[in-house]
Length: 278
Image (cartoon, rainbow, N blue to C red):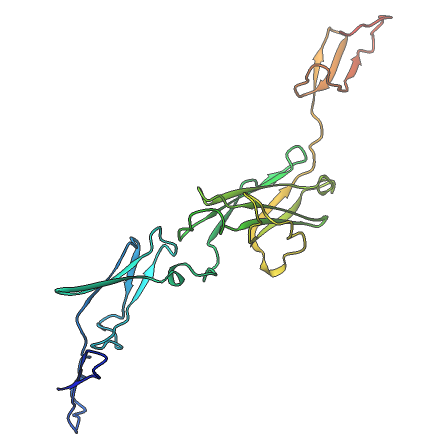
């Protein structure tokens, strides 16, 4: 092992190991020479140190430098992390650059789960509702960076779209999409396929852009399908007024002033000349 002085401006001494002229092939490789300083990440409560099994320190370690990999489970920590290096009795630390923990563009897509609330819709309640919520990694504080989820409903009679914006407090939002009335006029049960896309939010609180009215194509992620059932035929019940008169009325609540149709049933031997209904 030989010592040589660095230039006077550097104020450091570099240790250069000297190796024998011949190397025994059966001899195990020498461990790298490195400074055994302790590295730790502060103000990042959820993180892991990533290293190769049975390989420490990393192969690129030396007396003057060493690099290690940390995995942050929260890419936007509430406080800027600090990297601390200590070699008793010395210690130093520095702030991790913002570009490392707050990239301008998110490196992976948003991890979103979409849950369809209704399996069947009718003309009386023609709304398809889908709950969207973020899962996995945390999201940054504030609503400025949260996206919008746009729901696309595709039916043989056409398409429909509506969007919602994720709320920062819950990381969730709900799309309530009203399906057009003519989708229920097929005469039989049909099916609409639901899919969604993510898009940047528009300016203003809770705003989503007007785009997305065209076919999203392969970019849309499937949610599932919803059945469209046509209106059921009206149900009636018979109310006997006396032995000869029966009134057939709709089997549903009727409010005062509401118009409805009723059928008057008379027995074949009904002989009264006047009938008053109140």
